[in-house]
Image (cartoon, rainbow, N blue to C red; front, side, top):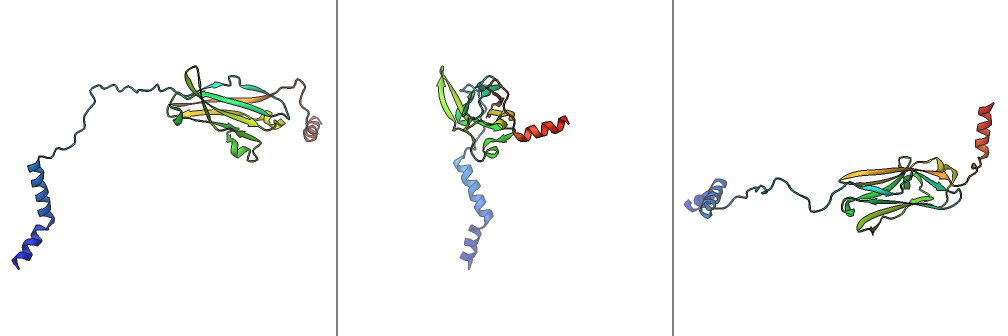
Length: 178
């Protein structure tokens, strides 16, 4: 009967903790320590700048009604390009949401080198420019952990004459004049 009592005592939580503490003291276990860096200034090994749109520079882009149009948006990511997003929105709405029929689309992102720098590009493609496109605001946005840049663009009719009004527009205008 005494053996049963001894084996139960060896398996108790207090006895197990005592054995662990004794082993730690005997083996002189080293606890991990937090080591402060020698210098208080940590310098990144890469150049971290905020992204910047480099093209297009103009806020007004010429477009011809009934013709296709491609507007490239090129940007210096200022950060490793894997961590930078570039995209288009129209009137504060994502292109895919505003034009689910695909009449206006944005291309896949492209990376390329120019003068030793990496640039990213995403194009806005109009299958055919329509009159309502001249009244919209298109925004190219480039964003990363270091910042954000955006340029707003509007389309300007490339033709010198005034665009034709629809019958509906003429009716509304004549009612206002009366």
